[in-house]
Image (cartoon, rainbow, N blue to C red):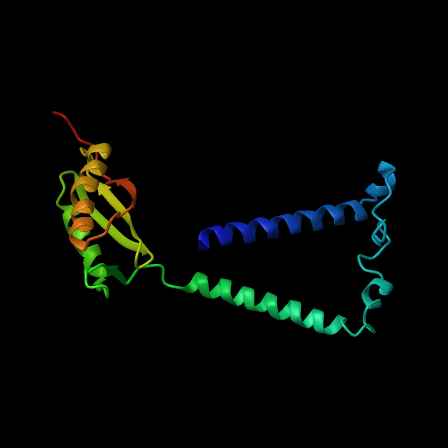
Length: 198
């Protein structure tokens, strides 16, 4: 969800900045007059000599009773949203525990690090895999796994991924009692020196 929020925030920020940039370009370059188009009504920035906000625009609502409470309320909401977003960025993404259905209605907790270690050890025992890194993410009730495999030069990527899914991930899913255990696998090739044939 956080990834989607980041995309929406960045998209909206980009649109606002593009709109402000185009408005600045139109005003500073006197594009309204050159194109023979009249700007929207109430638009104070019509040419290079004009300011973005005229004095009348800046002070027109100061004497209204609702103005300051609205300004303060909007700023408070904006600060709270930015704080929430910042804390969400700093939050640990690694899942520390998994909630397992124990059959008695209360459930049991499995340490996330223990499950990661087991999947890592089994993945590294596969032929062609030199090193594996496993991170458990998601929610306690619906975890998923991020796996990084460092493959030996002679390894076959398709076979390595298939073996990982059929063995290490399937064993982890069955032993933890999860219905599903989705995974995202990233492959890298180990560096090796050139082989010489004599």
